Length: 152
Image (cartoon, rainbow, N blue to C red; front, side, top):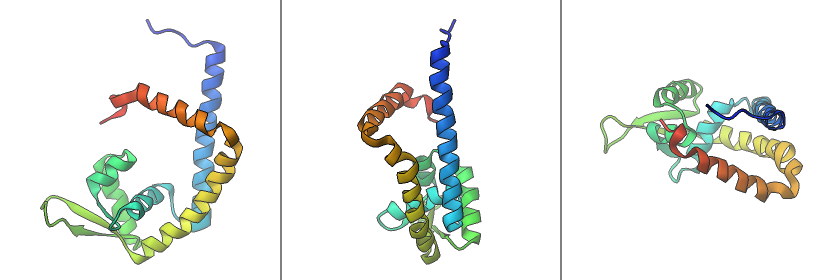
């Protein structure tokens, strides 16, 4: 039988979980209000923006952001309709598709990044202060404990 959590352990978990949900929501609201870009769009735009040639395969996007390929594909279709990305065939793999940033997508990525970075600084970095290294180390220990348990 699994060990039960104490009241104090539940309190720590509940506070952490509430913080994480509200931080995600605050960042999403600021992102959308500041640029009209949704959080899912931003994840894809930012990944493409970090890519050397501003393009990635759908499977690579899915791996980067932890989504199923079908979810990425549906999101990319919506982004194509908005002119943020375009698809092109992969010469080396007939089943593969490239997703590329368009000029409008690059502008949206740059505009949304400024506001998003400001919000991260305001809601997270400035509040965290000198505890950043402790949080990074703690986060790494959690990631190590999870290992492959969260993999597809």
